Image 1: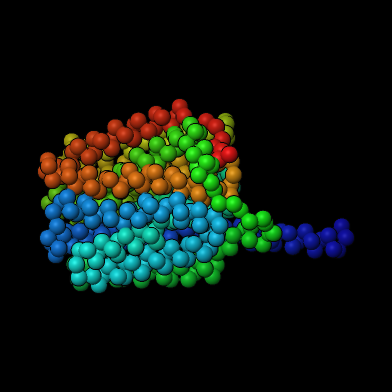
Image 2: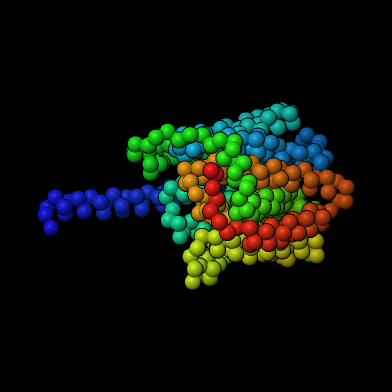
Length: 420
């Protein structure tokens, strides 16, 4: 082989090796972004007993406060992901994490509940493009056959964030105050934003590309003509509802049901999240190996989604138990299945969307719709607890919805999703 060809081949190998190494760094940073995001969200749920006492909040008011960050989060999911597709994950990721970290810091200095609500709205502004950034990075850097596993592993960052935020929050509250908790956790995100800006590069940035047109209203309408999109969306909506219910109310549920203090509540809640994270990875890998054993068609991932949603519907058995071990077991299993379902469902969306350059925006559409339902979870649960003194109806509602969404997904998700 001529010398120049040998050099060229060597350079290509080095370039490929660098890209392979880089993508794992990028996946790791997205994972940490989810950890920080959900750690900051957990800060409120574990602080709610103390915050509720300081501001004299009723269960209904606690529900509204818990949902407050979702007001702006829901409204800005689509606009922020449209901007993401135009400006890229590097800029939007850094800005998003900086904004929500600033909101956390402000939350530690408020003097009235109105001021606190404004900081939560700002938190939602920052977190709006979070999952669009993650989906874009996975679409850009993960191989099609590994997207489900990659998404599931990345999404376990949510549970690790909830676990870490809950434990750290419980100890900070016990030894200092809930205000100190917000200030400390808020400072972490600024470090991530700086590292992301310095390290991340989009794989298409170096190529000369024509400017991409912003997605039109007609193209968004076309999404809702796709049965596959509707099937994926139904799963996203129901899993989001349960996710936000548990994220907002689980510590208070454990205090209500088991009569334990804030430190023990934080520890037990964190154990559930950690067990769920580990379980989700195992469930996702095992089901992928079984479902794709003979046929690697992307739409077959809907069977993984269905099985996981059936497992998540076990949350409906919670009212049958009143001691710690079975309650923690049911919660851990349900959350593990919910994470695995979310990972498979997100991968299903990235696989089936025909135009990969639209994945950020399409993700934004699904989040806008699903978060419009998810933001109701803390509020509706607050009313249920206020009227009945129990959480039972909330768990039953979630179980029924998860079974229905799983069945719809199996029959609806079959074809490529097109915007034109």
